[in-house]
Image (cartoon, rainbow, N blue to C red; front, side, top):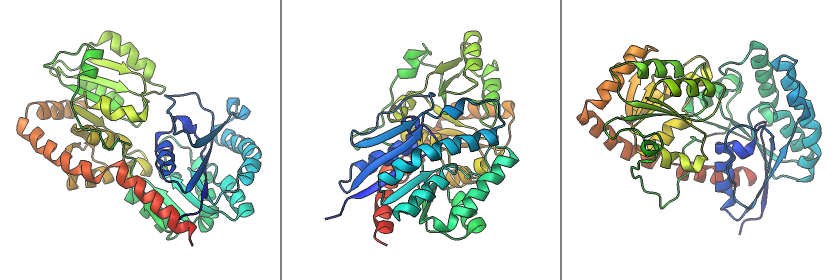
Length: 388
């Protein structure tokens, strides 16, 4: 018999929208020896996901988030002060056995609760936090400073790729670490079957292939303009579907009205992504290596496409290249040339033997890269660190 373990998740994101955190919470909720509480910050973007009934999520509405007159580093600091004042007492009152802190901004809150409650602390870095795309030098330096101060108090470090874990251990010191890939959560009874959802939704002819982009839709760092240029070309008769949200959505909607081959679909719950992705033919993951975090990344969309059973076209970033060398689950591109992208699209479409080979590799990789495997690692290691 296990005693009940109180686990407090803390995140500067809105946990109701955060698929990775909810997958972790939902997985732990199925184990009877955990009491789960989560603190997040209200952010009205994206699609609200449904957590399991026995997960208590408290969403704090920060007044200071509306203070857009300040530079981002100052605004983040003001947001942190308000969050600290509002979360610290409820956090201490919850008396957590383990605090699971996501991202860097709220690490000081987690440390203070740890001090009062003598909790164990898990730091879950969803990226290489001090070297992210679009982050200023000041914010990067501030982030790294927090991590350096906090590092010796962290009992377990979690991140999303081997290279990111290696970077932290080499830069801040060796720490017990756990790799948790952001694979999709799929029901055990789920069977990969093709469907016509996207084809029917956008009236796409049966002889035209569907290429799918999942994720945040923004202008910088995601290769979106390269997709658009490639699919505007006359020789490419395939269709491009965007699913997600972001500051570039209105531009996609404008192009949708001009080009019959380009379509926009609103964000969907994370537990529906694989099912909808199965109605596409190829996934696109052109994350540009504009920071160490993106160069070392293993984006969740890679695993969404994989579990949907469709090939992926991706940029040749470090960890993505390693994955594609292990399992040939698609095609890699070395540069940001729309002409080269169009060539790869046509090559994939017109080479049935290649598609057959890729499909065989996808079947092998699906077994290895599943949320069932990842979630078991979390539960096992939490029990291990709690017993120390």
